[in-house]
Length: 217
Image (cartoon, rainbow, N blue to C red; front, side):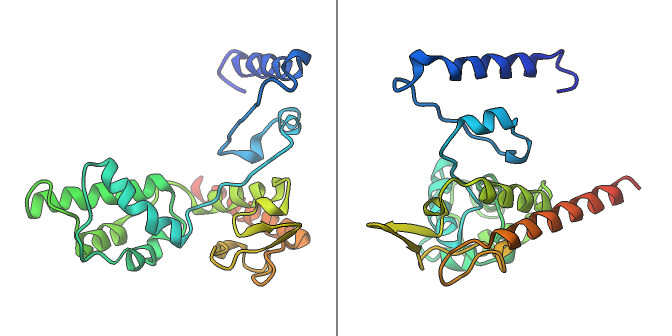
């Protein structure tokens, strides 16, 4: 809101007007995404009835993403690569898709230097690049954003670890629950304890404030 000469406010006003136009109802499907749900204008937030959380990739998703992202770089993984072992490395536990891509890029760069350009990425180089990776974001900030996204989710059936079976919504045992939601989500049922979630949000918010105060010195 500062430094853009009111552009953001004018865009928000026009968006609200567009969403409210009767001629769009039943004819236009509005889809929006935000990586900062805690900063959404309440009026805009209220216009979207279905809210779905997109969290950090799970172990299974990291395993599936690694070869796909490698292909985007024009590379392939060596046959001996154990994707599960790479996905289990501590540095990948709360990583973003962009972070995975950065790791693969580094592994490819080191492979090109030490071996020969274009050679398949080996287990050793993938693990080395993963261990050396340092995120350029604050993990606490990501935890905060994720917990806010969970609070805003419009149906428990939309939690990543839940599934609908007929008229029942139940825990999908094949999908892991993020470690930072331990004590907030019941691992057996997948249900979210709203009071525990609010405490978690408050706890992470205070930790962020403390972290910000330390960075000023």
